Length: 303
Image (cartoon, rainbow, N blue to C red):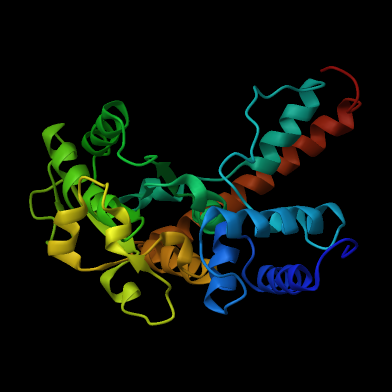
């Protein structure tokens, strides 16, 4: 795997592999932040991160890194589901069946992010708990934000929007000013955490990066003035100071645990466990039915 690499590149590659063994699934940028923190790359500029990306591509191609360890927003293909025969779709339905536990919960819960790069990082938690993940891609479009407001109004229960994003001029302005203002303008009628619901429909809570997160000396940041071209630059300096931080700098393990803790804190446990028991019974009933179907029909023959 190391053929043709300079010794310095081998050191970076080996360190990146060791990091991924511990924190996967993670983005390349998350690995780069770890390498930057321990001094193996000089900065987070494209020249440095592209070098790490190239080294990790070679490591994956050679089999030294599992492909699933590195995630990105564009990894999943999209296509209509298709089947070879009716039995195949019935099998898939049984295997993929899960009860919507949130129907019996007191809240509707979504995780919202300004950036899609963390989708794969937190997917294990979101998939396990059945929580919607919505990417705004920066400042969300009017259509996207209006859709969120519509869902809040139609949820028939209070909504918790758990926000994750950068602690920088645009990132903070999105969660503190732009998103709540537009949601209310579109009729969602909410408040920022920690104000209680009272007569409001939703609470928007930033769960990462937070003011406590960026106080940690191990979290690498950069000068706010590096964002001088951002229209929110002066607003951010007045509100938050001379340093900025990227969400990708947060350890993926800590981010996954943060998302899990925030979601589980909103779960009414008795109702959740009741749904688990119902799902177990329903799965058994479906398996019994499929067993009877298989006994009558050949799995390779149309029904």
